Amino acid sequence: MNKNLIKNHWLVVAASGLLIGLGSCSSGYSVVSVEGGRFPMTEAYDVNPDARAEAILAPYKRQVDSIMSPVIGHSAATLTSQRPESPLSNLIADVLRRSASSVIGGEADVAVMNMGGIRNALPEGVVTFGTIYEIAPFENALCVLTMDGKTLIRLFEQIAAVHGEGLSGARLVITSDGKLVDAKVGGKSVDPRKDYTVATIDYLAEGNDKMPAFRDAKSKTFPKDKVLRDLLIDYVKQCEEKGQFVTARTEGRIKVSED
Image 1 (cartoon, rainbow, N blue to C red):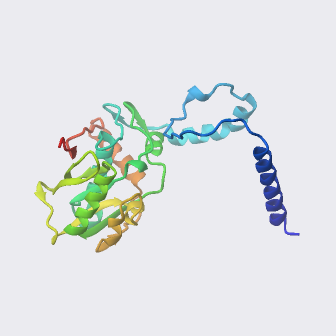
Image 2: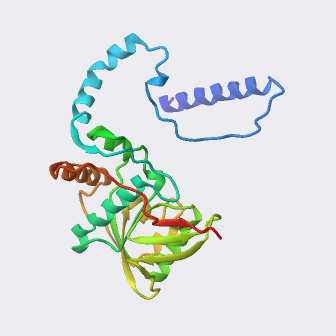
Image 3: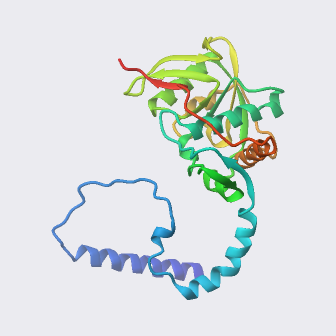
C-alpha cells in the first residue's frame, strides 16, 4: 500500500478518535465570543527555555544574526501603522510612489499600500536588515498600473470602506461608517476621464485585500527585482548616507468627516 495513503489513513483515524473523544465529554461551557489580534513574539514568552533546543538552534541563530544584525540606518521615532492613516503606512506608500520612476521616469500619481501587509512597527533608533524583514516579510514586489479616474474613484471608495490604507499622492475624506466623501489627487478633484498612474504591490494589483478595482486597470507593469523589502532597505540606506534619520508623520491624507 502507498505510504502516503497509510499516513493519511492514520491521520483520519486519529482525527476521528479525537472527535469521538470530544463528543463524549460535556463540560457545560460554550463559546460566547472570539477575539483576535497581533501579538509580537518577544522574550516575554521565554518562560521555560529548553537548553537542549537552544544548543541545537545556536549555530543557525548565529548564521541568521550575521545576516540580519548589520545596521543600515536610524529612525528618529517609532513609526507604527494603523487606520485611517499612520506614519509608517505613509512612509511605505511614499517609497512605492517614488520607486515607480524605474518604470515611468517619475513618481506615480498615487501609491497604495495595505495595512495588512505591514507586519511590524519601525522602532526608534537603530534600523537593521532584520528590522525591515519584520516589517515586510513577504515577497511582495512593486507594480505600476494605469487606470482611469472612474476606476480610481472606485478604488478610493474601497479604501474608505475599510477605513483607510497606506496612501501617497492623494487625500481622501471619508465618513466614520466607511463612505467616500471627497478625493483629490495632486490637490485636484479626480477626473473620471483622465488616466492616472498608481504604484502598489503585486498582491494588491491582482485585486486582493478588498480592493477589486485594481483588476480593472488599463495596464500593469511588474518591473524585475523591485521587491518591497529591498526598496525599503535602499531607502533607509540612502537616508543614512545623507546623514538623515528615517522619519514620517501623519498629514491628513485620510480624514474622517465629523458629519
